[in-house]
Amino acid sequence: MLKMEQYERAAAYINRAVGTADTAIVLGSGLGGYEEAMTDVQTVPYSGIPEFPVSTVPGHAGRLSVGTLSSKRVMMMSGRFHSYEGYGMDEVTMPVRVMHLLGVRTLILTNAAGGVNELFSPGDLMLITDYINYSGKNPLIGPNLEAFGPRFPDMSRAYDVSLRDLAKKQAQSLGIPLKEGVYCCFSGPTYETPAEVRMARVLGADAVGMSTVPETMVARHCGMRVMAISTITNMAAGIADGSISHDEVMQVSGQVKGSFTQLMNAIVSHLS
Ligand code: HPA
Image (cartoon, rainbow, N blue to C red; front, side, top):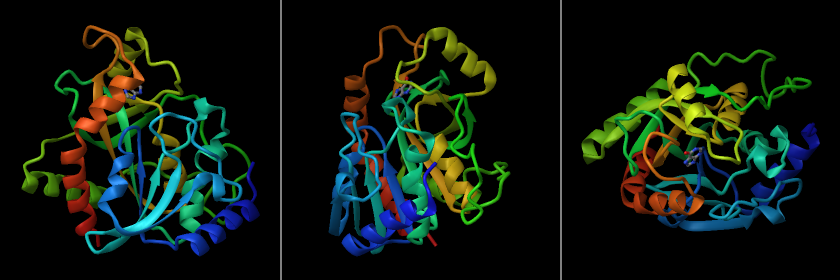
């Protein structure tokens, strides 16, 4: 279990090195390039932040930046941590608590995901409406740090309704199709089997992935408002023929860069 002093040490370092912002965006697999949309940027590698884990996944650069986007100061994490890398759930979600200490109030999570809903296609963007935690892990297990939030946090509306409305409205006015659905989190690092994907569908999932849910739980615990968007990089196992590879995930993620950038810029510029 990480201690409050460890979160505070990381937060103090980041504040000195790059400053802070009201809004933070976590960039998932292949979406790291979105950092370039910011101007007036200051960056620090995760390896330089005391107590911080480091990214080990190709396509997750491992740096934290603060810059200006649509005339707002924004913090971006290029690369996140996953439990399949061997990190404890407290380490996976450490950045969210550090952001909270830095005064971040709105968290936008992004990821690459496999499409389970047969109406989806690779290259679609999906606004996450709710999650299923099928990872077998919960980052809030253990002594509750009351300074962050209550023992039993409510998850009735994990993804903020007004932020979701904002995303839908901006997508519509840009003419960018935005799917909506439930994201089911598996632990990875194996992609799912076709049987697991059929199960996820029966349970109500529209997409499957290996991230985002732990960060959502910890962010809601400390009262942040959360929005999350998936890039559907492939159809989940068994939905379409063929096999799934990280290279394909990265490649399709790169292809949606244009619409992803337009949509995110518009969302950020309209944040209250
Ligand atoms: N499954 C899990 N995670 C993923 C997938 C998938 O099919 N595609 C991208 N990330």
